[in-house]
Length: 452
Image (tube, rainbow, N blue to C red; front, side, top):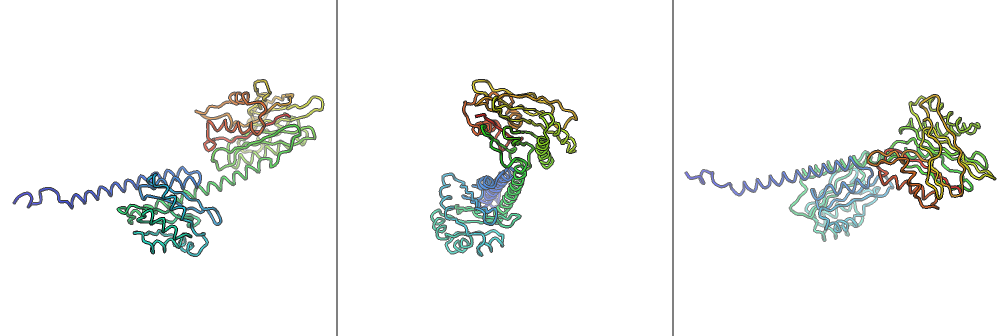
């Protein structure tokens, strides 16, 4: 018996085809796994819904389909958010053309509500007019427009997967394919349902974080003066920038209030840490200073009152602060008297002179029973600018490395005649150059004063 008759010759064509199919299946599964890994990274790193949707759509093409669109409605009555991605950048305009026709029905309509209630995937394969029209009629207003675009683009199959969040179905992941050889088989559909669940989980987390940030921002605003008094003859600008994307209230604070018709109190401070304890101590600090001032205490005594209040709060925290008074004498003009308790010193910017700090640092508040403080009075001239700030401006970690001296240098180089609002924005821009606002690890508070 020869080799061929014993089956020991060249492998048959069917064997080659089976090996080729197995190899292609392995490659496809690898592409799918890599796409899911990219999607997981997107979900874990997402900071807002729009970026998450855009990155998620991009992560799923071309591994699963030629186009991917993600539709998301955060809540009843809220605007729909959409992201679209094409596996081939040259085909992106086609996907945009198709997307332009996909005007979803309002979530409250019966047809859409039934689909949402079913919370299951729908596959149209192969795409034909009647079947596609039946599916689209549940979701889309302009069914004829979509069918025309689908026919023009040569769409072979469409898969819609609901985005099921903790608040119910809030959108859909739509995969559109114009490659007839590629099909949405059960394994692929199951994988895309897993992808949709990860997107939904990410959207839930982003929404929760946004709600926490809103609560934090509301609390922070409550800890700052809602309205600043007008100081006749002095321009005033204030800023508060929270630390990055933090969801906890920070400890930076400021205040400005009238003492009488010709004098005003100005305060800036920083409680260590963030969260409820820091927020509580921030409130204690502002109201303690106001109470001490109303009882006629001088600069040292005001900060000594604050030191005692922090020590007796039993919160195991400390803070820094600058308390000052801005006064206008009919004969001598304006002056600023300041006292610092461990806080970055105010900076005086005088036209024609280098900027310089005012006063001495002093002892921080809440660490010792007795604190060492120095009071300094500075006469102010027309055009003088004073900047009070918290250390979020300067104490930047490597490689940013900004210091108080760097801020003094910046202010020395500012063009004369800048308004206080422009100065505040310039300081914000200067800080963001080294560390983007989203990555900032500390809050920033500013009070900018200019004598007219």
